[in-house]
Length: 429
Image 1 (tube, rainbow, N blue to C red):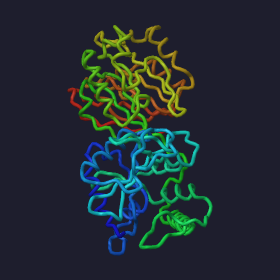
Image 2 (image 1 turned 60 degrees about the horizontal axis):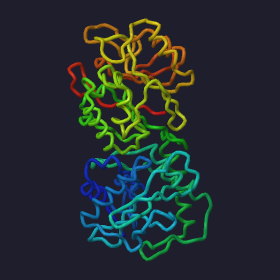
Image 3 (image 1 turned 90 degrees about the vertical axis):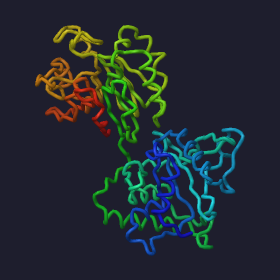
Image 4 (image 1 turned 180 degrees about the vertical axis):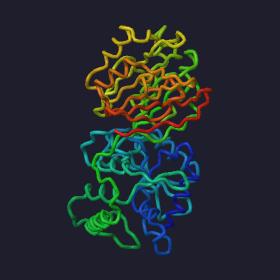
């Protein structure tokens, strides 16, 4: 049927709760039509469905929440959308296809982004709704669509036409003789005709939009925060593949405050191993009774003086800093004990996370003093990790380039008055 893309985007945005808008990435014909809406004849596009990717990869619970909200708003399952009694075998699972109550010639299908390393062209991920099990189809090359996400005025995102054309062409590299499922305006379209159209669109877009990064390997989007001091719910976390917290979760290390932080982590659209947390000088209980971490952190990964590998990226995290008002994880400035902590950082570290900054980068205090660690600076000059994420000195918030190739990110959320006014800093790997 003929659909106005702006009306569809507005319909979805009004129906789905605002906190789930960041999880929606509209792809396919409607996304392309929205992007080129000023050129559309009659402001409409002929299509039978809207493909909605629920991001990031692995966001199964968010997919279920979106489906539930649409059903509560009166949307209905299509005839091809019905539950199975179990998650296995996955080959029997049906896609979640929902249509507005007053439009029976159009539906929305919920898709997923593939996990890193997916080899199959298509993988079904089980998703449980109130009436049983459904499947979220994850297509291998849809990972490209996260490379170039475009914002809209209604708060949800759509994929860029160039990368949609490329992803579809890679998914259908040969011209077939089969016809597509379903009909458009009473016509069943040859799959080969659609694939040829994609090839022509890709060629045209490559010339018309030369600034697009044509990479098959989208970067890992990493959000960095630090020094939230019990105000994490005031922080808006943008869509990402990984979240890093560089310490000072609390004011005084109270256990119930650590638990409140962990509860907040559970609300994020990220699995536990994609939320990495370091301690800071205010997190006193994590030094005095380190065993509490096993009980306090159930929805994130607490890392102390250790390496975590995420998608091949080696991330080392350490809470120590030169002595500061005799709080937690303090060692004497310039001491052998502090040097030993930094010497323990592996040579192959890609991203270094410490609570305190190195000397001279993001360490200028409100009194005009540089309070970063000189020994830490010496070590990162030797190691030259691509990124060094830190916090501790609230006034030092920002991103700093070094002359030895490392980018230092002071991700303090709070300012000198402990107000959560600084936005998370996004880096890409």
